[in-house]
Image 1 (cartoon, rainbow, N blue to C red):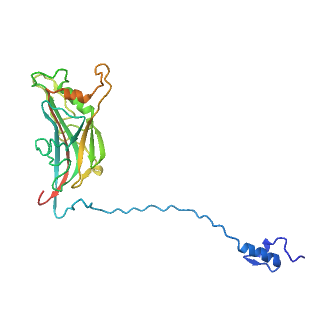
Image 2 (image 1 turned 90 degrees about the vertical axis):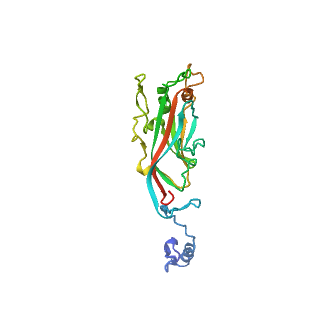
Length: 272
C-alpha cells in the first residue's frame, strides 16, 4: 500500500494532515489551510427611517407670551362697490393697496397680513354679490343685463387661497355660496332677482376641521380671483368669448362684489 493517498484532499481534516496518508496529504492540507476564504454575502435588511418632530419658532417670529384671548372674527374685502366699476382678470383679495386701510371696503390694514401679532385660523370663506341696473337712465349699449352678471362671475371664475408664496386651495366660483346676499323680486318688473346660492349668512364654504388654514403672526395670506378668458366665441365674438369683458361692459349697472373669511383669531389680551 502506497504511503501517498490517491485522494490527498480527503486526507485533510480540519486543517491538520491525516496520520495515514503522509507527506503529500500534509502539503495539500497546508495549501487548503492558507487558501483565502471567500466572503459570504449577508442579506441586507432595510432599517426604517426615524423622524423626530420638534416645535421650532422661526427667528423672525416673536413668540406670544402671557395671556391671549380667542375670538371669532370675519375678514371682508369689497372688490366692487358702486357704478362704473371694472375688475381685472386677476384680482387680489385682502392685498389690493387701493382698498387697504379703508374700513368701508376692507378691514385689512396691511396687505395680506394681520396686525398686532394676531394669528388667524380660517374656518370658512364666503362670497356676496349684488347687481342692479333698474336706476340706470341710459344703459350701456350692448352690455349684459344685471341678472346675467351673476352667471358670469359665478361660473367663469375660480378662487385661489394662497399662504406666503404657495397655493393651497383652488375653488371654482360656483362652489362658494352666497354669504348674505340679496334675493327676491323686483317690485318694478316682477322679475326674480337671481343670486348665487341662497342668500343666507350660514351659507359658507366650510373647511374640514383637520384641514383648516392657520395664518401665524407675521405671515401673509390672500385670496386671488381669476377669470377665464379667450374662450371659443364663434361669429358673435370674433376675438373669442371673454366673460370678464362682458362683465366689465355693464358700466351703468350697480355692482357689489365682496369676499370674506370666517375664523378664529388669537389676540394679545392686553393690546388686542
